[in-house]
Each structure stands twice: as structure tokens, then as C-alpha cells.
Amino acid sequence: MRKYAYLKEPIKCNMKDYIYKIMFYRTKDGILLFEYCSRDAVQCSYDGQYDFIEDLYEEWDDLIDEKGWIEIEDPLPDCQHDAFIPIRVKGRNIGNPEWGKLETLKNGEWVEYNPV
Figure (cartoon, helix red, strand yellow):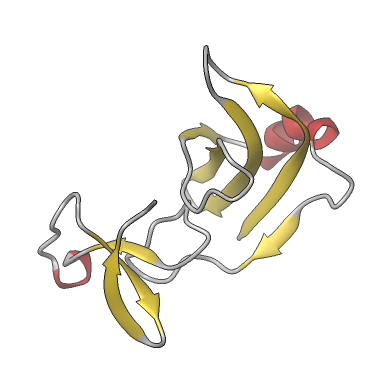
């Protein structure tokens, strides 16, 4: 299960970056939290982990906007857990990952992905 939410106000997370939205992905091993430094970001800038969903809700619920948590589909096989669109490392699906090269699914075909 994945859910994301926009924050009521951006949260400064270091000397230059602000977090605008968050997403969590609940797996059998725990809960992954992804933090995004732009309202339009497709991939996260920072991540963390929680053992219990209640702890995540307790920490973040008061900080998210009135739309609340929005559920989205889990990532496709071999795709990045933090991405809002299908993105995977090229070759990962065949056991020969080309680290640093990404591809995305467009019109049913995997094509090169170059984040702006």
C-alpha cells in the first residue's frame, strides 16, 4: 500500500531544502517514508523508515493538508518505490541492472527516462 500527502507548510530539512510532500510505502519489512523537495517531484529527495504505521501517522498527520492521505497503486515489479510514475533501473527486470540509467513506461513501452 502506498499513500502520499502534501504538507500544510513546507518543512525545512537542511540548510537549503524544504519538504513539500511525503509518501509512504507499507511492505512486509516495515514502512518506507519518502520526502519530496518539490510539489511536482516524481522521485524523492530523502527517505526513512518506520516500524509501525501508527508512529508515522502520529508524526505526520498534523502536518499534512486538508486533502489528507491519498492512496495510489503500488509500484510495478522492478520499479522505484518512491516514484509517482513507473521508473526502473534499465536492465533490472532481466537481472542485469545498468545503474545510473533509468527507464519509464510510456504507451506500453519502456523508454529512456531523463529527469529534468
